[in-house]
Length: 359
Image (cartoon, rainbow, N blue to C red):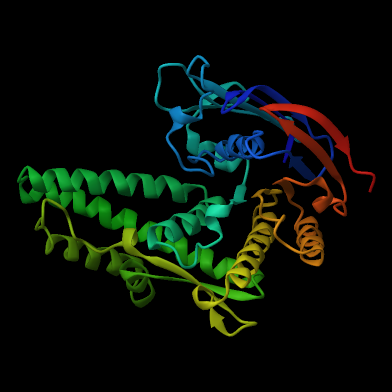
């Protein structure tokens, strides 16, 4: 968990520092455009991923700034973690205790998950958005997962280039073998996560379905890899200058609600929100019990739309999961019954007031 964070030249924040102490809940309130979500986005970068908005890195730098930014956090075990962008560069960099590290290494230090308004309809929106959301949860459980997906995307691009340039079969075989091995590893990671999360997800059941996942279930890992390699060998044609192959980049995730006895995608909007929150609660418990780490959960306006009983239940269960929660909202009174909290007032990219909860 984070003990202190300093955000510099990020979005509309020139320099913002928040000292958390032993608070488990950090509530950030203020008007729209005050910079509340920017604080959560800055924290989300400490996961090593693209952040909760998923936008290009350069757009995060403060307008009229020098083109760079930094997010520096100290954890409760006194580890220093930093993500930064140098001016005139496109890629982020990371440091742990002042030593340069790969971005993927950050996920081993901080387990961060988030819910924002864009996830409210994750069960009914595009498959790619849903797959990305669930892959983020998988990567939060197994940090190497995101590296495998990144590697797979690069290999698929390399394969497309090789096909367009009419590369010989030996070269394509080498690429396809790497794709097959990486795809099986990605699919296996998803299946493992689904099995683990379902133990803690009392309300529902997570499932993942796709060509690769079915191959893994029906075969040994070696046989699944060989069969996918053979599939790739037999599908080397380009249609409209594009590849049309199946694989883990086409898989889909779903949730079945045991209480309603319905798939999540055909429940009401309010029920989907409740299912999603319960899924995050289960995820927090999974992370803490399996890794011993206390996860960070970022809730951007997620709790503000719940009634008082639902909010109290949410934070009570998060407290039981031993997570640190960062939540934003317009109205401080919405969070008045939350224990062990500090309330941060944000205005025009500045922190104007920090008040500790009386509970």
